Image (cartoon, rainbow, N blue to C red):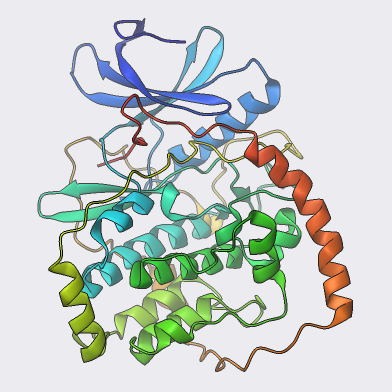
Length: 409
């Protein structure tokens, strides 16, 4: 355990930011430059924890994107591994949505586009995040606008020509309310389309201010996601224009073969959105009335700094460049750097957006068959084991009781 005033190489400990089940995050200051950094330190001398942390560091160090948290160094603290990241004290998207709902629709679309572009960039490098959710998207105010930043690649899956390095398997890997049906069944067998499903859940929260899947416990959520009953978007369909409904439908298809194939297609659909006409007059009136009221936000429970640990199938290795999927090699983001309002789209994104699938209309929910119910019961029994482990981790909180997390500029 580090204390304020302790020194680690060129850095001095300022305070503890958060304590999780198997890692602690500290705020550090560079003793010469005065720059602030976040240091994530594993709590236990366990080879599996060390391998996981190092892989997380390698992944984020190779993802040079203005909307992804960079890892700038790996340090050793008392024989334990630690990741060094830029730090800005800002809320995660979960807390930000609670404090700012209803979000102006133009702002929601702009923020969501930046998130999608960052996820698409990670996919182009052969990575599947597998735990996209508002709590893993950090908000940072730059000048007169907010910017989102994706973090926590601790359970990311490395695909492509990486030799399978670092892929983890197991049930219960991820956050239930944002997991695609195929991820609920087996997280090791997912591809980038699982992240597309999670993006649909996030867009739903941007627009509605509530979770799409809000059953009282993880097993009930899993049943809602993996079951045969189509996802009910009727409440949001009443006031949202067809262009945004198309994105929601395309991302939230339970059958991944019918889901939007990549992030480029989402960006293409959002390019065609007329933000001034997204919400119908009745919804705009409701939003205006809501925004005119002063609402005192209730305290928000802390969110974990980590997801539950899952075993490594193979030792973690650095991401290796592979053809046109080579990671960017630009310098790490600095604390005062400000990016463009909209991240530039690379050629691979533009080439993928030539065809926009038309999502099929939602059908009336069928009644689940008894055979499917028996199959689901067996699957949920297995899921219970994974989420029992998840529940054992203590959410990290700051001394003030508010979750604080590392955020890049």
